[in-house]
Length: 607
Ligand SMILES: NC(=O)c1ccc[n+]([C@@H]2O[C@H](COP(=O)([O-])OP(=O)(O)OC[C@H]3O[C@@H](n4cnc5c(N)ncnc54)[C@H](O)[C@@H]3O)[C@@H](O)[C@H]2O)c1
Ligand SMILES: O=C(O)[C@H](O)COP(=O)(O)O
Image 1 (cartoon, rainbow, N blue to C red):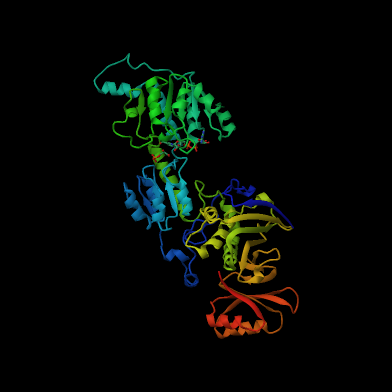
Image 2 (tube, rainbow, N blue to C red):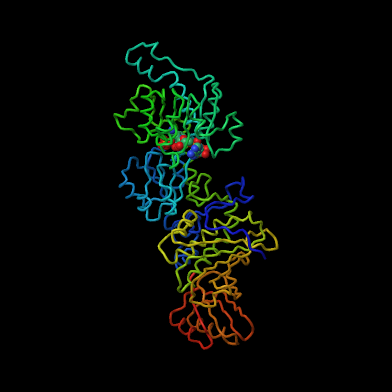
């Protein structure tokens, strides 16, 4: 047995080979609280028992259909799709107060760029909001950090408006070069000014595409078709994509200093905010022409105005603005050398229908608990990985629950070690989901925080939990992804001293047996008990009659034992008895067991 591949609580994923390119259709979680995105707590035992006798899933009878709030105009095709699965509330133009008032009744929210989904919205949702769908690409109007903290998934519809945005960029480029908008306005004002609107040709001119993602690369492809010499700047884009289109990737400085046209296709992030400012404009070729169909905030608009006045920038064509709509008397909008459109990049019939369908599908998938490919703030786990790991999810959460209940004191839980025994190659075991469920088990019993796949790492970090994971290589068949999971809490005292392993940590281990989760080790004691109902852990002198004495106390109380095992160091010395019970014994019964002669310590743990 060798320990290796230590990873810490880190959202960066190790992609398994099996994760690549597999279909997304294996399992669904619907409203089950075991959904990776479920934001509700697991039901009480009484509720679970009632529910298990009914054909409906646990939460399905609490809320048979999810409610989706749509706050900006969404294409009919998307609304129709949503209605097949959810109650759809289309309430447009809500104020922030109105949105906050409604949100606690909604499972999903769908917005375009027109609604600001701020921290207050997540705080007002009371944990019910499970997914925010952004119609389109830009998620700069959604507070993604707040969404993550609240365990709310954010999905977008990033592909359906790419061509529309690229076409709009080209439309602005060509109409700017030929002053189409100005000429149109002049004719409509009754004039005929043929010599006023002298344009520039695009053929052979140099165009710098800033941001070579979906839209940027489509703009580049089209500009090449117009005979332009296209270069691009994007430190994160794959070089082969550029090579395939015949575009040279260059540094930022080279891109801005040498070109006749600059087209912006960057996301708005802290790094790109006001990236085009007095300093960058001053380094541009005099007479440069700029197109922006990305986000207004990447340009310092006052600096652009100064650059236009000084002649550094000859013309600008803008579809997007820092403030939308811009103020009425905005000097940039009114500038003679600026062509503007009111954020129309995605405004084609085809794109609007496409994004409506794309977002409706993504939101429905997310509500079903399926991982959607366009999730912005969740790890990219394929459905195959989720499906394969789902039998271990229950073990993971329950081991977390058991371990935390065993803590009695110390400095608070700071250091948690997780061991995964597996015959798989290290890079073929993605533990993200299991780690999230262990964190859920550790945190939820002692707090009001809801933990799911989206917010688990954040919650752990916020609570100062340092998690380390080790994959332990085992011989055997790699058929099963995991042989056992062990959760250890270091530097704490335990209310059940036998749960402290030889190395000094509270330690619990579980594995699947006949498809059912079992507790297989407590501290240094081997045990075997099914992880269901409640557990009694009892350390006693190993001698005849002890099992019978405990069993008869429980029997008199009509408490059904579902599983039991005894693990011992050596005959006639100490033993640890683990008893799984369907009903929770009364205090009196627990007292009687605790007071039995030869019982050294005893604890009741709830799963
Ligand atoms: N006007 C509209 O209606 C409209 C429509 C669609 C998209 N958009 C906007 O266009 C932009 C691009 O969209 P997309 O779908 O192509 O996104 P994308 O994520 O596919 O591409 C963005 C590219 O920018 C690059 N990038 C990020 N930071 C950078 C930096 N600091 N320097 C250089 N490159 C950087 C990324 O590597 C990525 O390749 C987004 O801002 C989006 O919101 C606007
Ligand atoms: O980010 C996008 O996809 C576009 O800017 C469209 O945004 P909108 O939905 O606000 O028009």
